[in-house]
Each structure stands twice: as structure tokens, then as C-alpha cells.
Length: 401
Image: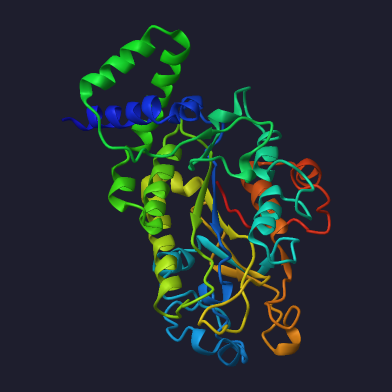
């Protein structure tokens, strides 16, 4: 069986038999108005920022972190911070000045509920349920384009369900590989023939088939099984293929779950280090698939909040406040850490237990959207991030695109 035929089978199987046609056929690979690409990666579960980016130069770091202190410091960023040893490729990007690391950052949310924290992060608001759509969807409604077109031709969620950050009035596309077993070719051919007599479904099946051909079939996901790290790698690769072409999509959202490390977190090795390694490999797969388009790409990696500074009774960390974030890509003006470091002395911790937030994550978001995608300041301060004037726009994050 040819590769083309295999891809066609995988798509028709998912579109006609699994109901994915309801979301995938909205995809249309129209000519891009600009070369800039933006990818948002949401790490769900609350990433431990002091594990991903240890503040080894803080005199209180080892005492406060105890058994969770990162001892392998091969990936130093400066005299205060290093990257976790699992983040080898991200360290290479830092040396190439394609990575900015943000630390002691947080959304305006100050409680410790995953659900509310993710809502605030994705709504771009100041409190849970204060708005009912996502900041990235609102951004699409003011995105400058050279000619009118549907926003579903610009943005895609690589997820079974469109995440809150992309929900709203602007239509978006979604794509996820099928994990169903194969069916006979003649059955799929009959389904295609059935749809071919209906102009509405025929056009959408053709469009979705083109999308699936670009993204790739489900083999990467299927071979990964239910392993979240393997799934992230497959999804990140698909995102790269969708955004790489000159006529490809411009904006994508990827989710990675499993960052809630209450027990047996590990330090240089272990549960969290393995997840960080999977993230690092997935981002490298994304870079590889983007090819030359990487030079016009900015990838922002965020999480809903951080974790406690001290280890808990089950060798893990509990829900915290401030954490780290990453901005990586060929369009990024990198090779630096941006942090107003509060320190890890007990008197400097938020509520005596968490890393104190000193950088509003909305400042980062506004800085990227303004410089990279051309969103006007009045829209950033108004419709995209309402009531956010206290979060000043962070300049200088993007280089020449």
C-alpha cells in the first residue's frame, strides 16, 4: 500500500466513522498573509518552575529545595539560573539566542485550583469566569490581514476539543490523529463515493483530506499508545507540518498534560525529568518539521501556576504560585533570562511557601502578540486582555521576522 493511500484510509476512517469530520473539514490551507507563525504550548497540571529552571545561584536554593535540588548544572544560563539537565535541546536554542526564559512569572490568579488557574490563564482575565472566551480567539478578531478570510484558515487546535484559549466568536480549526483500527479499503471507497454526490460534504472531505495529508497519518500517535510523552511528540510534529508550508496555518495550540507532581517528583532523574525530556524532544521535533519556517516562528510554553518551594511529605510538591515560562523560535530575540528575582529566603516567599510572582504573564503575552503578530496596543490593552494596563507590555522579545 502506498503512503498516499494509507493516509487517505486513516483520514476517511476518522472523518466518516469517528465523527472527526465535524471539526477537521473546517480546515482550509489558504495562502498566508505573513510569514509569522505562533504556537502556544499549555502545560496542564502546574509545572514546577524551580525544577525546570533551578535558581542554583540563590544561596537559599539547596536548603529550601532539599532532596528536589537539581545537582547536575550542565545547562547554566547565567550566574543564577540553569536549565534542567533534561532540557538539552532548549539549552542549544538558548546558546543560539533563540530562547528567552521567564522566571517568577504568573497570571493574576493567586489561588491554587487547576480549573480556575487554567481558566484565568486561557481567558486572559483577572479572575475566573470574568469573561467567557479565550484571549487567543479575541486576538484573531483583531489580527491584521492583507485580505479578508476566515479565521479557521489561520488557527488550529491540535486537540480533540478546542481549548478555552481558542474558543470564542472567531471560528478555528481542529485536528487530532485517529487511533481507530484500520477498516477495509473498499468500505472507505464506498464512503468516499457516498459523500462525493453531496457538494457540501464532498468539498469538506477534500479539504480535510488535504489537511490530514499535510499533518500526517495517525502512525506516530498509534505507536505512542496512550503515553503522554509520545503523544506530545506526535502532535508537535503534526503542528510543524501544518504550519511549515508557505500556504500553511499561522497559529496553533498544543496541550501537554501530566505536570501535577504531588508525589515522587524526582530531581535530576525521575518522573518530572522524564516529562521535561519529552517536552524537549517534542519541541525539537516541531522545529525539525517547520524547517525554514522556524526562522519566522515563536513558540510560547506556559502553565497555570507553579508549585511549592519546599518538598512535601510524599517527595513531591504541592500547588504554588509563580513559575517559569519559555519563548523559543527563530524569530525570538533570545539568549537571556528575564526575571525580577524575589529570592528564596523564607521571608521572601509568597504566603511563606511559594515563589513570589514578580512578572505578570500577560506582559509576556502582549509583548509577543504585539511584536510578532502586529496586534495594536489599543487592542492588546482593550479587547484581547481587558483590564490589563497594570501589566506593561514587555518589549524586545521578537527579532527580525
